[in-house]
Image (tube, one colour):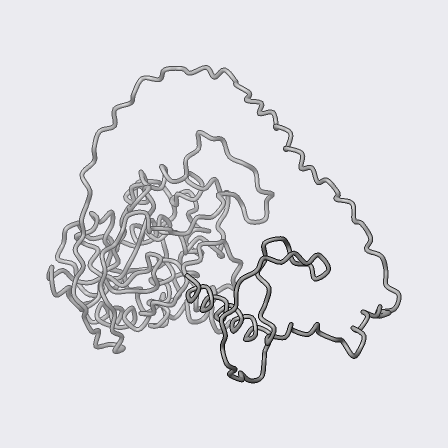
Length: 386
């Protein structure tokens, strides 16, 4: 057991010396050492501890040649103490409810029996293809006519110099115009006209060419009453109504219907419907010749009427009763509709002066062939020069 104890003691000694950082190991001669229990109270060994061999020096106590540094306080200068910020409570009030007031009103309903309206078949007018007029070379696109487009001269049926007096509601001018029969002008006892009719086919062709020269889609349809000169008075060339087409066509041949109609009305006012329809008491040169019913009465009085349904020729003057019973008038020209084969009519129905087939559109109300004799022409020209 002694050898084992010696080896253990040596191993322990070497370990302690290594831990103390002994610079080198010097071998010495080994000898058997008996283990003697020693009690050293001064060295701090407890009882029963093993004493170190004599050749092993005790590890020296570490000596501090310099005093350990003492921490120094560093002055960072003055600083503001943190300010405590009190939390501000935020409260959001809920919106107050908006009261909704619903007002109800009792409604009384009256039962009305349903009215039955008889269906009226619609009139369809097909459009003719485009055609070219040789005189004066004006080309227009034919189009269907619509009812309600008619707007002849609508003037107040009172004397022009008298105050405008409202008529009775039972007095219907349109109805009287629609019911007027031109033959009445021949049945009323009145002085005979001074104008004589001397119509010829050659004159009819001349009147046809004169009417074709009036073609102009830009003529505005203005039906207002206008004061004009006399004789040969006229409204502005860029305006006019259906009667102005006829009047201007005759004036192109040196014939003034304004003076002829006015002079005859002064002689035989009762033979004209101006009093019956318009309530007038005397002739008015501003408007008399511009009314279809007065032209019908004049042509009847001078013997220019021809039977309705005749083979209408160029230069014939035709009248109608169109929508609302309103009279209309136009001049037959030497051009035919390429679709229907009917002679065309130069007229103004509210879309300018145009040439269209009106014979299939409405039944004529009157038909006339009028050309004043030479004496009547000279009298008309004399008034113009005067």
